Image 1: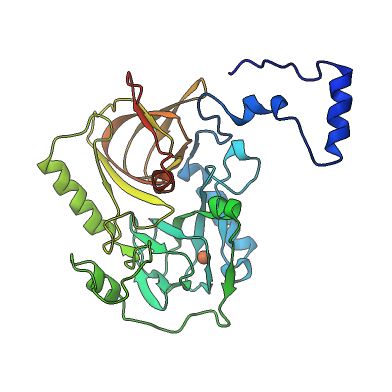
Image 2: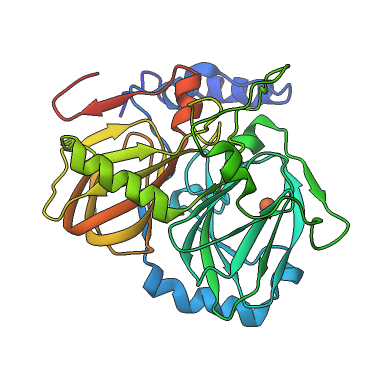
Length: 358
Ligand SMILES: [Fe+2]
């Protein structure tokens, strides 16, 4: 903690002065400087672990309380305990668990906030339609709905479907430009056949036209787990393991080579059984969803160290500048969403390995 040079309320004269200037919406910077400018990040979000098996029953209770149609979206928000009900899991990201029951429809809408969904359970019979093109979702798949793209969800199967939503809502809200359009019908009209967008953009080719696209978000909105996992396993078998992250790949926008979403960086990470990662920290706020494997994640944050035992479908959060260490018991695959690209684009991103100061 930075030492305060000026004690609050050091004199009645100063207090009276502060009260007087407050009527003009003025305040003394010298009383607040050490809160505003700290030696290292002092974020309010805390590390946390949402145990999926522990919470699954209460999530499914929501299906009896409200329909997806009435709720618009039937979601339990993953409210970071440090953020006082701000509907945020980190300073810049929102996350929630969404439940869609057989036969339900979540009505079509679009918004300025970008979103991704990462599927936790289901039988591949529920879909997200983006601009009318359906992607049928299986566990581990990632589906994007970038800023202002029409989307709706439907369910043609028999098993409940649950996914993790991650949106850049807190970041968007701080900047101001929140917009929402409701489509007049529940479903956006059918667009291209399922798979069309992947066929166009998922083959190592990008369109050349004038003017060239300036959209920073990926046109390819569906990243099936089967293919992403195969890429990760191939990468792991052909290259040396990194002592910090194991093997980690970033989901990419095929048009730019940059991140799939401009505001939410997304990754898939593989760690072998018995792996103990070298501790490190970054300025990202990281949201993890466990896909495969079991082990523990130890987070040291603002002087406190906590170890979380994880298993598939759990969600964990590591705040900005929290030091993380993974100890993996069985081969693990972990999805991660973070605000890394926002920070990198603005020149704010930092990372630090243990024993290093950069
Ligand atoms: Fe939405």
